[in-house]
Each structure stands twice: as C-alpha cells, then as structure tokens.
Length: 314
Length: 226
Image (cartoon, rainbow over all chains, first blue to last red; front, side, top):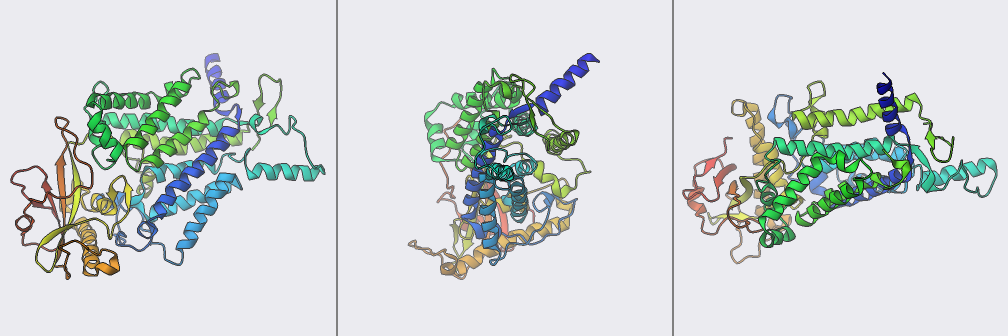
C-alpha cells in the first residue's frame, strides 16, 4: 500500500509538479512559425488545394461500409473565390496571434478549427502534418502557452500595475522574471509524451510492416528512390555504400522504439535530443519536401529543455 | 487554473493544482493518446468512435513497408493525329504535395486503386471510382482542347493537336531491387521505345486506367477492373 502511495505521489509530482513556463511558450511560437511555413507552401497552389479545381471530387455519398470511406469521410464544398481571401487572411491573423501569444488559447482553438476545416475540404491532401497539427492545436487551446513571452503576459502585467496604480513593478516572488515563472508540468509532459508515443508507435508500426529488428532489408535505401526522391538523396545513393543506409535505418528504428529511454532520463536526454534532431535533419536533407515535417518534429524538442535543471526533472 | 507557486522553501518550489485542472489534464491526455495508440497498434479505431473521425488519429508511421516495386501514373492523350502522347501531370495538377506526389497520384491512389475484400462485388463503389477516373480524364481533355486557356501551351516540335480523341491513364509498376544500382531520378517518363499505339489499342471506353509492369518483356496491359 505504501509503495502504491509512493508511486502515485511520484506520478503526481511528475505530471503536475512545477516546471518552467518558457519551454511551453517557446514551443508555442516555434510551432506557430512551422505551421505558417507549411500552410504558406500549400497556399502557393491555393485554387488546387481549396478551390473548385479539377482535383475536387464531388460528393460521393460514401457510407461506412465502403472502401472509399478513408478517401472522403466528409464532403465539404470547395471554398468560393469570394471567401478565399477571408480563409487565407484568418489563417495568418490567427497564426500571428499564436506566435506572439495574444489571446493564446483562443487563437490556438480557432486555428484548430481552421486546420480541421481546410483538412476536410482537402482531405486527400491532408496527411500526417495536418492531423498531428490539429491535435497539437487542440492541446495548446487548453494549455497556459501564453504565461510568459507573450502579449497576454504583457497585458496581465499592465493590468496588474494599473490596478495597483504603479508605473513599474520590480521583480518579486509574485512577479518573477520570465525564466523563473513556473507552471504545472502537465502541458509540457503531455507534449513530451505526444512526441515519445509518436516515435514508439511509429516504430511498432514499422515492425508490423516490413522493418526487422536485426536486419535492415534496405527499406530506407529503397524508399529514397520513391516519391521523396531528391537530388541530395540521389547523390547519396550513388556515392555512399548501401550498408550505411542500413545502419542509419536501424539507428532510426531503435531510437524510435526506445524513445522513452533516450528522451525521459536526464542523463540520456541530451544524447537523445542530438540523435533525434540529427535524424530529422537527415530526413529533410535526403528526402525532398519533407523539411516541414522535420521542422515540426524538431519543434517538439523545445519542450525537453532546459537540460540539467532541477526544475524540469522527471 | 490555479498555478500560484508556493515558495515553501527556495530549493523545492511547489505548485498547487486543483482537482478540476488535474481531471481536465488527464482527460485531454486520454483523448489524445488512447485513440492514437489504439489506431497505431490495432490498425483501426473501435466502432464506438464515428468512422468519419478515424483519420484524425491515423498518422503515426511513414515508410513502414519496403517497396518491392513502386507505381507511377502516366497520362496519355490521343490527339487529332491519332497518336498517343504522354503529357505531364500539370496542368491541370500543378501541385507536388508530398515529395513528387501530385494530386493526380493522390486521386488515383485514394479513389481508384483503393481496394477491399468485396471491391469487385460492390457496383456502387465501382461507379464512384469510375466517376473520379472520368473526371480526371475529362480535366486533361479540356486542358489540351484549350491549351492556351489552361496554360498547357505545347511549344515542342511536334505539338499536341486538338481536338483530343481520348485520354488514358497508365499506372506502371517499377521493380526496386537492392541488387542493382539506384534508379534514375524523377520525373519518370515512359521509355521512348514503347509502342504505345499497339499497346493501347484496346477497344474500350476512352477514360480507362491501365496497369502494366515496367520491366516485363511482353508488357501485358491489364485494364483496371472498372
């Protein structure tokens, strides 16, 4: 019984204990920047993505039993020419609000709504980025992402000064500098475990697919020749021995499968972060047009900071 | 939210979190993680979650399968000179969404090629697939019938002459072997020595998708079962 109580206390301290607020704020800003870059790229072909183009599939009235249910779960009409500037403008307005932390939760919630809308209008063009971004925005819409480094924090401080009738308020225990502001750890833990579970579940799916734990079978080497074939990747295929790709593939599989071991303990975390970020940089380098996915994944590493500080101990 | 730090001592700051906030945080974690884990481990979400929402949690893995061969989609138009010619995906599909994948690839992959155990017995699904295929082919027909309007002006020595007689899609499976050297980069075009005139002389509807193998000597063309 005492052990159970001790475990519950540990879990309570781990999930709800104090942690610095700034990593969550930095993640919020980084994620908003990545989101802006990704959707700006999509908007380069706006008519094809959202408008009434030849790519638009009419309402097929798909039912639950149809094999096409994955291709058209909902039918959303294309965005009209008159509405297009509003759809685009609202995205940049909300992304900016999230970036600077102005009405942070509301901005994240409305952005989640926006992402779900454009994803449903363009469902076949909606892949991992849209879907994961939607979940992250739902998370941010209930998290205190604007506690520091935000317009919200400035407004709170201004309102507090105005109520007290002072012009400036010196740093104190009630008004600490941004680096020392603490929040409950649950938002940071939720995002950390989102990345960790994504890695581990992805590795399990790969093993269920055609990846092996003790042999590469050159999956990565073959994938580099397919849809994400880019000039740097092709150069690497021609000049780097095939076994190097096998080693990289196995390293990626073990890193993903045992992600909790590399990213949670404080001693292994720096090495885990270096390995993970290197893996995503190599993906961005070798595979064409996957830089936005790599940027999204790298942005998650911000919530594993600061390294070596007691306040973020697990 | 109650997040006031309580400075009991300087070494161990504490945070008071209400039960309400704890419950909401755990509920959020459950909504995010449980369907995500279930979809990844089992492969499909339970029926209790509406099927329309399943896709939102299904994104965990890229590149999970080794490719023994990979497909490429090719558009062939038969112009007024009665010759079959390969044309690029864009126009009308300019956008490379994922790597080299255009919306033509996505439409073929998601709507036309997707198959299930009872695919051949379901006339409604076949009708829907054919509708999408015909829409794609019609887009190319209109595009090359009015090339200036569609931005498809052909400045080559042997330009496509409207009106377009027929449009066909060819899905070619290209073997990937780790025995040989890496394959040449994209864009993948059909080999110039392929005899398209004879290969595509099937007496079928104009809008048809064919499948064939890249390296097969006899190159048997199989009209996709629509």
